[in-house]
Image (cartoon, rainbow, N blue to C red; front, top):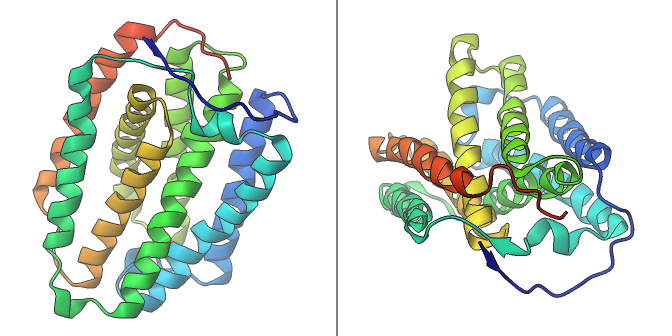
Length: 257
């Protein structure tokens, strides 16, 4: 484990599991309320600029606005963005490298003449929203709160379970019930991969960037009527391997919030 230096900032409210859960629930309340008001059809997200704006960008951006205010009030910015140490063997950096390659392949698969300026704008804003918002609540504030009580192995497990759980309500908005268990499983694995990226880099910024770009590259293929490459499924077994390597190092360690 390597120690890293981060600039100190005042913590106005001490981290707790309760506060971490409240931020998680607050974000989801805003997100799903926006979906309800905008009349989402889950299976049509990303098919054009309008659905990308209403059902992808706006819900995440509204949630992000809530988080900016809440985290400023709590004084948690340094805590959610930076760890005091990094962990894991160097070779697990292959995970973000492979994820970046898949993202680039997905974007290159999109014909330029199928993408309007408006779609590109809202897809980019959605990438910012989902990368900042979902990472801030699950690998950010939730992890900070969980670390006040649990060892790192439990922090990974609980935060990853809650990340996958936030996708369960998708069935209410049109996701076929038969597809939900697979989506929950894959998001649990992907969330574990983003957790690995935070721990190996010592910052939430890396998973924030890759999470947003990953989702946006998939939605742009949907909008262009293209199938994404099956190469994307290579990231899931790789994430499991890297997670095991990381947890062997520090699953029982207690990290400061």
